Image 1 (cartoon, one colour):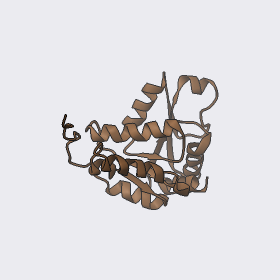
Image 2 (spheres, helix red, strand yellow):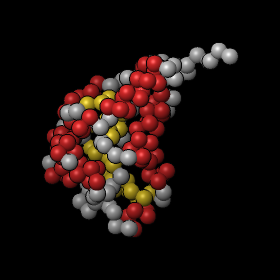
Image 3 (tube, rainbow, N blue to C red):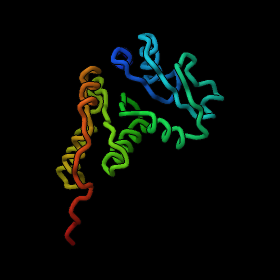
Image 4 (spheres, rainbow, N blue to C red):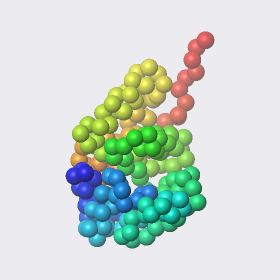
Length: 175
């Protein structure tokens, strides 16, 4: 939670806007609270169902209610300049990999970063390195992912990040 608070503070101090799923719960709720406490702008994009169930953060600077999860994710992607993941489960992994895939395919040119609290994302980094070693991933695509322990260093790295200029496709397998 301390890293989530520090990230929220740093986002607000830098005059950045936080766009997230709109809930008051979990680590993202902690980031939102921290950014708001520092006077930051926090926009929530929530599904109608989650809104009706009372999950929306009550103190947001702004929010949008979307019909479903797909439209919610698409809208958050439109509003965001980059993507940051904190430790989480399947949804977190899916979103990190989806954002990286869209960059790889050239559908957007937005950085993807993981706040490596307690070395949580080290095994993901190791998996990517293994995929490169085995020939399933290009090194440039592995290097797209920013993994930092410090919120300030993470935001600095995102600010300097550039999409790789490399063809997605790996040479076909010889049969």
